[in-house]
Length: 181
Image 1 (cartoon, rainbow, N blue to C red):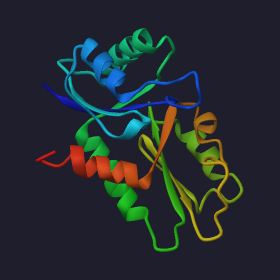
Image 2: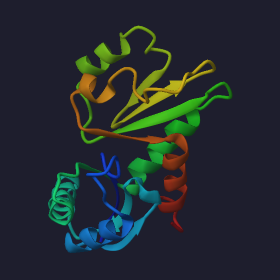
Image 3: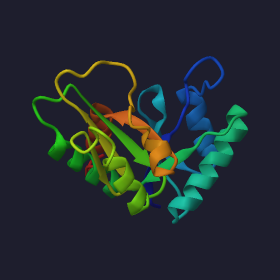
């Protein structure tokens, strides 16, 4: 059975969208998945599924998660190879002057005209890199904590997205995408 890595969007934010890891594991099993493992409580899940289509895996998980929680949980699924490639891109893009490196993982690859419009925004070209289903936000020295996404990536690209930081993405790739992972 194929292995997938799922990223859950907008959980454990505030008092009404709680979805503890134990409940994630239960709901993932209810979706017919096995070998379920989670990493920190931000909605990172490794699983195996008999389903062969990313869209079918996402739909199955979203249905089970909604049944478990009572609210919609947008879910973005990647193969281990896809996640390893995103992590390799992140490693390539990192530089010593970066204060923060956030990644937006996208449900679908964005349209070229939407990417071009995002990159044309003032100051974005040097700090936003779009590769396939991942957007890298690179914040150099002088970064002031505040908005994780001053460019409105999800809205600008018109796709469902969830964000993680550099450390989470590269750690998951090492943990779940290596031959021994």
